[in-house]
Length: 379
Image 1: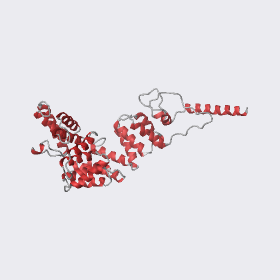
Image 2: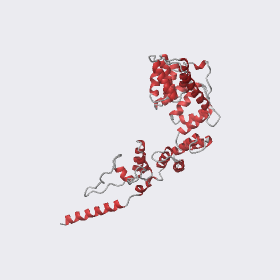
Image 3: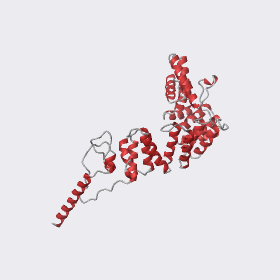
């Protein structure tokens, strides 16, 4: 009898607790309802963690008799859940977690909220909100938030374009451990983006990032050694830098290593090896590698000659922004090459796009002699 009374008492307590919980929605329930579900109350972060993505409705989770309810998710678990949803493109669900009261002072959550407002992911695009969240994260020394501010000032997004301010933010990010910020400063000086073009200054910043094993910097520094721009030409140093980048599967490093093998620049000439390396980078969508493959297919170097394949690779490279590919296509259509009919208008348009990009990037036009198909180094 005593046992039955005890079970009855415990059951009554559980029913009362469940009723009380159902009557008071959490703060997350009140504030994080998706716009598309006006009549349906949004799940709290805790409920979202327990409900499979895509599940609609369903019975409430019940605790077996005699067992304690599971503990609520920790802030670390909520952050991990938000990042997982964001990675899968489930932005409304990610927003619920990042907006959870437990994460309002977390710099990672703040930075991701900034990015979502900047891109309009799960929310309307809102520069004011994006800046506010990035600022909160940057105030805590979050390097990636500082890096983001550098990009916004450099590109003139949400702010007026200001290269000096961009460099200042990149330097902050680098001091807090983001080596890629030094690479950004190097790029600014290499192409003359808001500053006087100075390859020697660019090499200084690339070296700082390359010393931290940053692959993009290793590639750019290698290119300067390969071409002798701002630095004395040194094929051996270029090769070693490209090999470090290749170890990290960097497409830029692969492309230039392919150039070295194709031209026998500091390494034995090996067209087949060049094609193998270039193809791996080209399949990653890297335009310079696609240009190299187009040339190999056209000339039959390291691969069977195929005008059709050459044209396809040139088009991919040109659409990806490769200036040399654009100029090659201008020749193809102007003179009716690679099996294409003459089309002066197409040729003119590709040449115009190439000229515009050269002007934007401060790259001089090539001489008539260097316009030949054997041109390989990417400007």
